[in-house]
Image 1 (spheres, rainbow, N blue to C red):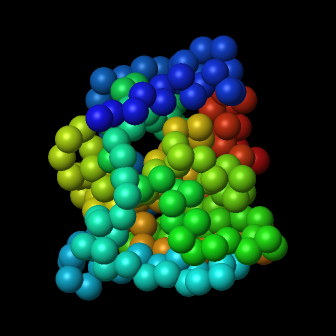
Image 2 (tube, helix red, strand yellow):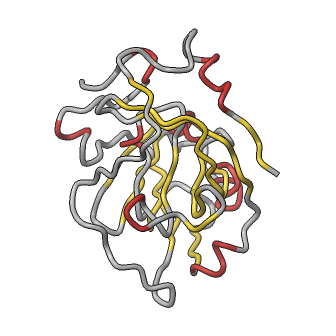
Length: 197
């Protein structure tokens, strides 16, 4: 079963296609460096920081977590949007609930295998539409699109969704991620065209 969340834009703007974006059927590949190697035997996802219980998952353990498939739209800060992407994965609140997020947690940092980082306010993450996605259109998520695991954030520009994610840290103070340190918006709302700080 696929849950359609493509009407999410109604919370943020009048049009499904955010201003300044063009719709594409392609799925361009953009990343800060090359595609890292994935070894399912050594891969690990950690959940750390301002939580009651720090967590660690092997690849098999993560794939056994409750998940779902969602039809989402995907908006790149460079100006293109791809509609009707079907991502399969674990909603962010599922991990947050398992870890027991402390009351003093206000921000989240995501870490990728390629040393990429990106940050989001905790409240922006605590929605089922923020997925830790391992599947795309009925197959495994391709490596160049962040497989085995990436974060997808349909209400934000896609640089807020770390590819090849291996770490989630709950923070008590905001910190800036890779692109945020280089002048990209910390809020990244496509409907307000919040591309740069």
